[in-house]
Length: 458
Image (cartoon, rainbow, N blue to C red):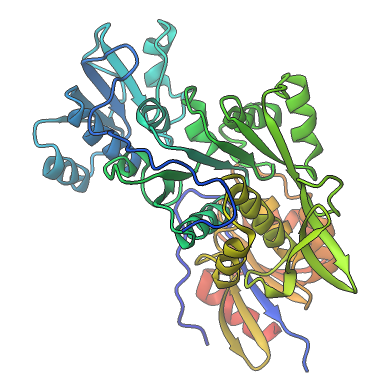
C-alpha cells in the first residue's frame, strides 16, 4: 500500500511515523544590514595555535580538519571507527593528514595545540579525560566559526522545530534579496559556509552538543524555540540540558524567547541574563501583550499570527500544519523582522514555504486516509506537539531508541487524539508500558509490518 521508504538514523530516539484517518466527508521597509565581506580565507584564531587534534570524523569533523589545514595548522584526526570509507574520504581532501582509528586518546600534543571535538563525541568520553584534566578547553566547529565570521549571525536552537525555523528564515532572507547562508546542525557544516565570502548573513541551526563547546559566538539575534526532554543519556538532567541551550543568548545583541516556556524564563532570570543592553522579544501561543511581541489571536473566529495588535497572516494561509508550526512561523517572522525585512516580503516567503521532508510530511492520501511521515520527530515533545495539531483520529506508528526518555507526557495527547499505536524497534515495549492502559497497542516486526497493520486499522 505504501512504497515510500522511511529512513531513520541509527541511534536516534523514538521515530514517530503517523497514520491519520481522516473523518469523511531587495529588502523593503526596514534597516538594510551592511554587506560585509567576510574575508574568512585566513583568520586569526585565539591563541595562535599551530596544531589541532580533531576528535570525530563526521561531517563537522571533516570540515574542521579541512578548515584548520587551510589556516596552516598541522592536523591529526581521531575516530573510534575504522571504516575504509573514512580513510578514503579524508585522504581525498587531506592526503597529508593522519587518521588515528580506534582510541580517541590524543597522541601528539603541545602547548600550541587545539582540541577540536565533534558534536557527536561527548566531552565525558574517557579517552578525553587525561587532556581535559590538565585544563585544556575543548573547542567545536561553531566556536571556530565564531572566531572567524565577520557578518551577522542568526542563531537558532531548541528541542524541536530548529530545522523548520532555520530553513524558513533562510528562505525569507533569500526572498528578500539577502545573501543568506544556511547551515550548522542542518545540512552544511558551519565552517564550509565561510568558503563563500560574499555571504552577508548566516542562519545557523545549533544543537546543544554544538553549544557545549562554543563561547565566542555573538549573534545579531538568538532564539531558544522550546524545551523538551532530549538527549538525557548525555546530560545529568534537565537543568544541565537547559543551561546548555541558554548559552546561545550570552553573546547575542537581541534575544527572542518563547513565553510559553516558563522553565526557560525562570532559568534566564536566575542566570541574570536579562541585561539592560539586550532587546527582548517574545512569541507565544497567546495574544501578544506588547507591540513588539508575537502571538496568536482569534479574529472573527479565525486564528491569525500577530505582532502586537497587527495581524500578519491567517493560520489557514500557512502550508505547514499544527499550532507548533504556527509558533515556528512566528519565531521565523520575528527573527527576519529584527533584521529589517519587511512584513510583506516575509508573508510572501511564508505562504510559499512547504516545510521540510520527514516533518509532518503528507506522503499519500488513499481512501480518505492521510499517511503522514513525521520520522524527524525524534523526541517525546516533538511528537506531542505534532499530535496536538491533528484533528482526525490517529493511528500512530512509533518506536526506536528511547535515550532515557520519559514517555509520560504522551499519555494526555494519546488519550485525546490516538485510536491505536503500533510499536517497532528496540524500545517498543517501553512505550507500550507507558500507554497501553489508555489506548490499544500492538507490536510489529518492522516498518512494513507496521504499515500493514495500520492499513487494516485505518
